[in-house]
Image (tube, rainbow, N blue to C red; front, side):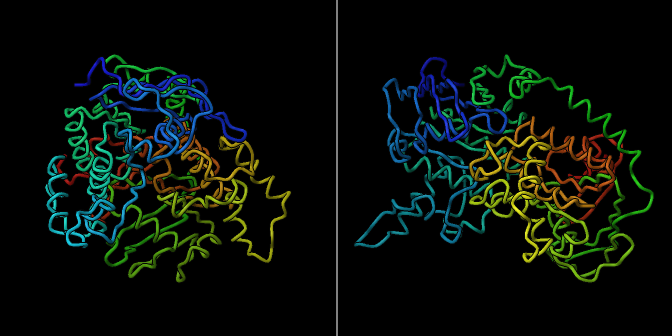
Length: 505
């Protein structure tokens, strides 16, 4: 259990502003030795900024940091490491072409006769991993390992670099399945027992209650409080995070019922035994105008592969696809856009936003591509479009000219959504649109999907969160092992879970 007295990190009265944005306004944070401390809040609440200040990526405008009761000025990540603070970010920064051992000990490889002593390196890496309760062939190429193993390697490296007393885990479970998450939690519990203090940043409430000892809540750059998990109900936590009641979630039940009236009789899109060899097995899918169909299943079940087929990123090797009564022969993203299909990809960092462009430039990108580069959108029209969707989606940005890389993850997600809404699509394919974003932003996106359905648009909604899929979709298709294995309307989540797991009801 967590130590109830020894504070290893104390951050007091932290202030930080960027151009046009007050990121942190008089924020406090304390971390005790041997505890797992969750840091939560809506996107833009200030979590990332607070961690960047602690780890030397950014410097506070004012405020005090104490490490082991000693005042600390942390101006660089190396200074943080020297103080025993290491960070594992959401996007694991490793070298996929090197071995597991080489990644763990990179820059600190044992040398013998002027050369890297690979035998000793492998033994040392193996010992480090075994200390975390992980048995693994450290000579295998890291890129061939699962995301979970890559996370473990990143944690092992972080601990090895600094003999860390403080470990910051930034959304470490966002790409892990249930079994992999439990493996990570086992490592976190072991580290807690050894006295390592862990800051756990996540948007998964279930995980917070499973693993965390305390939680600190930020909202709009302000400190809302620190609480013992055992004394804080889920409703209280969510209310503190988003500053409003959960009435809006109940509203979605009524919205979904109302949107049923908008579903057209004739199918707008029909896939018959559509397949891509080695990617997804033959499947049937019909989608009507005004209908939201959810795709549920574990990571790697084939949901994203279906999205890529329907959008033309991948070409099918069998079956046929009919859109608005016309059989499709030519598959490409450009053709799909012209047919009124839009895809918000799962990976917003690499396949979504362009960080060096402004919010405005990101929003008009797909629309401009559809028009062709010889029919340029004028600046005034660009600003009108950008401002329209900034307002519609409640994108937190000082202006349309803000670089999108400076926005929070949730607001970046909204920018991607705005980009595709600007094309006025008939079908919107959303692949994990709420991954890594806060509960308030999730509710906004879910309500928007149902609003679009009421307007007669179709949507394919892909999410790893079953409750979210059920709440948002009129029908749910279940994927397992690259197969479409079932369809559910009003059945319980338990039935869908059985279908996902492949067990009898």
